[in-house]
Image (cartoon, rainbow, N blue to C red; front, side):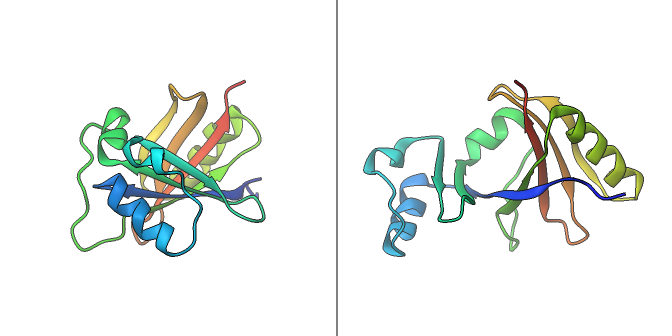
Length: 132
């Protein structure tokens, strides 16, 4: 069975939003100055892929035990699925195949069905779909 998903978001967890955005502005990304104090920033890239930044506090708002990795990447991959049931099914399929389920499916306050599974190297792979 194949999961009907497509890579939609590359998310970065940052300790200092302003410092991180300043770096990416230097690379030519058009990020508004007022985003420096936001807990979540999102930029649509050419082709529709989105790059997002979340503060550590934002991550801890739904994963209170989260700690910043030492010597590891702060990057996660997020895959959009067609509907909330597909999030549950994909999570069940992946964890059933032996992959570590970091966070079981839940209805997130930002309007999505969400789950997190780790890839074989420990990279966080988010599965999501709009609730409405």
